[in-house]
Image 1 (cartoon, helix red, strand yellow):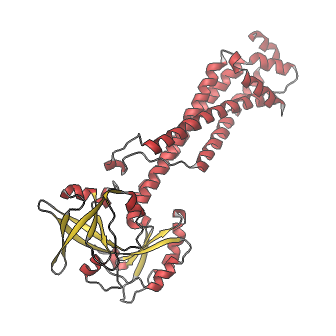
Image 2 (image 1 turned 60 degrees about the vertical axis):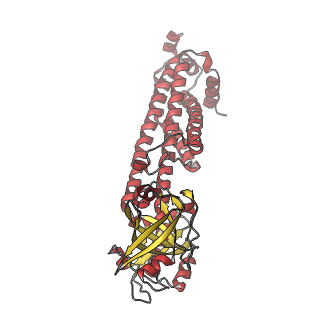
Image 3 (image 1 turned 90 degrees about the vertical axis):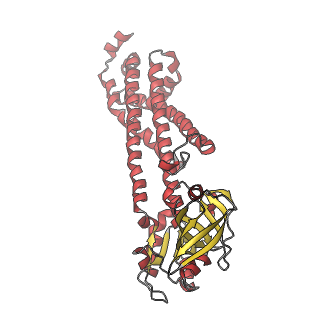
Length: 413
């Protein structure tokens, strides 16, 4: 153990004996604790919010979608043929977790009192239902089939509220192509994601229903949806998919193209990326708060310990030794404040995760409670960064000890 560290530990252990330094130490400790706690909560909220919104968008559109090039140029459904050979190649990619075909058509849900235009998405038993199960509000999931048409329907709470529908109700759907076709569906479940632009558009039914209503062949569909294993590796997976399918044609002559979820909804992901700017601003402000409280606290402690500084110098201690002593002492205070900040910050995040006591307006924020996500590596980085920055900003104030002479320090006795 070095001499400055030894002296700093002795001072830190005897801080209660000096009435002048107690408020300064407490204020500095609280300043660091509040700063770190706010940083942990801010990062947890932004991470939770971004990942929650991202997962909701992906739940409706997957990570990568393969469809006809003409489907991106028109609002009308355009069929493509995703052959079994191409399907197997996509599934064999190490970056791809799941591949599923889907069908899509447009129609009108009508009751005696009102009507609503919606998109009917046909899915089969291989469809990844995890997202829909998580957001199922009432009822149960339909037994989606790739062969039979049971005319079961999963609608959103937005549709149910507008049309005054509930589980087990029957509703007529009108499909207008060359002529008007009518189908009668049974509502088996109602989901709610609070993403208005999706909730008011998509309802889910059996895979063959849109296929037959569109008059497509059995091997045709609206496209294929791909889920990647790691969102951070989506660009790598997207490039491989592009090399495999882009500008290729199916057996009916339709040109295939692929698109990531970020390309499909750029406005949402751009908005989420802008949240990072807010994080950096808050982190900078909180580090400044912690740094300034530590500077003021250290100056008060140095002035209060003037006699001790003079005594150490009289015994032969160099200015650097005395400075290192007070930097070590400051590091102990910072560490104490960081421990308190971790307890407060992580505690509040866990409390929100388990109770959801902070509620939000779903119409504005797409979620009804503030989502928070603990990321241990980021929290460790915040702790290390706070410690290093706070100690660094104290280096200049610590030079105050070089202006204290042993002779003059006796006047403070």
